[in-house]
Amino acid sequence: MELLVASAIGILTAGGIYLMLRLRTFPVILGISLLTYAVNVFLFASGRLSVGAPPILRDGVEVYTDPLPQALVLTAIVISFGMTAVVVMIALGAYLGSDDDHVDDAIDEPSTGTGDAT
Image (cartoon, rainbow, N blue to C red; front, top):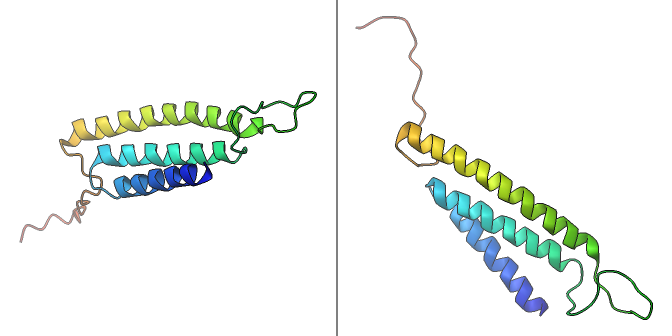
């Protein structure tokens, strides 16, 4: 089970980094989302991987999971959804403003303002 979860985290991380290195806006947003999912799975796995174990100690229970990573992941999911919505709106505004979705557009040099036309 640990090998499967570790492999999933590695694949999500590799895919996220690959997509973040693309030159278009939409793959960068997808890459950030994949990295967020990888971090969420990592946090969730840090609370012990056990099937059917309760998150709270009770009488007679010897194996339990830590509820703190579960709460952190739930909070991270809500925050990442909101941030993804903000980034999508910023990217959409940049695309509509320039008719181009390249991430690394060249910056125009400002004119010196001397007024010489020679």
